[in-house]
Structure formats: C-alpha cells, structure tokens
Amino acid sequence: KKSFYINLSPTLPFINRETVIRKKEYLMFCITEIAKYQSKNVGMIFFEDYFNELIFLIKNIKLLKEKIKSKIKFRVKSHIKDELDTTQIFKYYFDKCSHDNFLKRSFSDSILNSKLVVHNFAQTAFTETMHMNIPSIVFCNPKIMQFDKFSLKTFNLLKKNNIAFNNSRESINFINKNWNEIDKWWNSKNVQRARNFYLKNYFNVDEKPTLKW
Image (cartoon, rainbow, N blue to C red):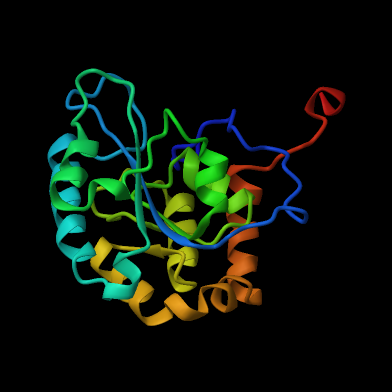
C-alpha cells in the first residue's frame, strides 16, 4: 500500500483545467494541522516533529525577499479539537491580513489566485493542486515521514524536479531564486512528467468510475 496520505474524495476532481483563468497573485502556504494525540495509522509525522517543523518554517519564511513576503497567504484547515491552533501562530508572527479563512473562502478560489502553492505534507490539498496543474511544491523530511519504498522513489523524483524538498529552508531558497519564472519551471517537460507520474500512481482519476466498475 502506498503511504502518501491522500483523500480519495477530493473537492476538485473534474474542473476543466484548460479553461480555468488564474490571477497568479499569491504565494499560498497550505498548512495541514495535526492532532496532538494520534488515533489512526496514517502517513503523518508525530506531534513533536510537526511542531519543530512548523517553527522552522516560520523562521525560514522570514528569509523570503520582501516583494514576495507581501504576496503571502496562509491557509490552515482544522476540525479536530485537540489540534494545535496553527492559525493563531501565523497571525502572531505575520500580518493578520495574510490569513486565508477556509470557512469564508473556497479552496478553489484560493489556489486559482495563487502563483505558487506550498504544502507542508503530501496531503489531499497537494494532490488537488497537482491535479489542477497549479504550480505546487511540498516539503517534508523523509527521515520523519512514514514512506514505503515506492513513495520514497516518488518523493525523490519530485525532489529532483524541485516539486519536493527535504525541509522548508530548501523550499524558501527555491522560491527566492525562481519567483519570477515559476510558470517556466512548472511547465517544463521534466516537471510535468514528474507531476503526471505522481497523479497516475496516487490520483488516477476516472471521470466515469461507475461505468468502469
């Protein structure tokens, strides 16, 4: 069983990617919350590791170039009561206006107005932005993630094409160097080939699944 954690019922499965009009304005950080006490076996890191990665991310975001910082949006989705309130942490360290409220704004609106979406896990949202062909990167430490052999192979392929990074510092460095040429990088043959490999193995969508069944 491949251990990339994805939801098989994403919210954006069949939007026509060819007709979508994007404003390409924001640098969206799409953050997954994690429960302090884990109650199910999923490919996620433990709470202490998550917290350390979060603090490291906050420090590294401050290394962004000033013109990029002004484009930041944070989207944190949480429903579990015993989760860390990451939204308040980001509001404390950054401009409150940078918070993208998932209760008031749809996920599709958020990503369609984003020049680049950064994920802290290969979560459902990462799979959705990959499917929508929105420039996306993910950072996660393979030493603390629960990767099987095939998932690690996939991670390394994404990393080779600058879609995946071992940590947030590497991803921030990439953003600083490539912000003005994000579309050129994303639309390159190798990046699109890696993207399609990921989707084929982790989100192989059939538009008429019942007929296929």
